[in-house]
Length: 245
Image (cartoon, rainbow, N blue to C red; front, side):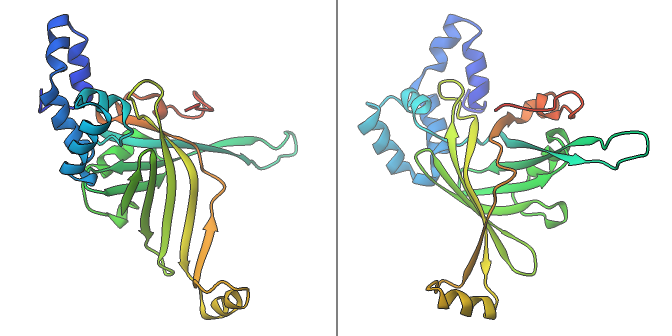
C-alpha cells in the first residue's frame, strides 16, 4: 500500500471492512504525510502532528490543507468572441475555451502552462520535471502558508516578466483539496528608465512594474492522472459551454 497513491488506498478501503481497517494504519498515512508536507521538513511535520492532531496521522491528512501531487490542477476559462456579420445573418457569437494548468511537486517546484488544448492532450507535457519552453511549459517555485499558496515563475520574453499567483486551497469533500481559487494573478517586471523616473517622482522607488490580471481567473479543479482521458473538462464548448468548479 505504501507504493500506491493516497487515492488508490482510499479506493482499497472501500472494498471491505478488513481492508478499511488495514488502510487506517498510521504507518501508511505517516508515509504520505511526510511526503505531502516535505516542503516544511520532517521535524516540523512530526511536531505539528503531535501538537495539533494528537499524533494521529490520518486526522492530519484529512484536516490539514495540502497540495496534491498525483495529478494536475486545471482551470477552464471561457469568453465570448463576436463573429463576422453577413448580408443575411446577424453577427454570430463564439464561445472560446482555454485552460491554465498547474502541476505541483513536493519539493517546492511546479510546472505551469496555458493552452487551448484540453487536459488529455497536455498531460504528457507535464510529466517531466524540467521547463520546456518549446512547449510553453514553465518551471517555477511555490510556497504555502496553511491554505494559501503563492506561485512564481519567469515568463521567457524580452522583459523577463515574472508571473506571480496567489491561490487558496478548497475541498468539495472532506480532505479532498481538489480546488484552487485565485486571489490574485500579477505580471511583474523591471521598468524601463523613463518609466522608473516617473514612478520615482510619484514616490514609488521599487522600479517594478505590476500588471494585475482580471480575466482568466476561473478556479482550478484537480484531475488525477488516471482520469485525464475521461474527465469532463475534455468536453468541447458544444457539449459543455460552462463548468462550475
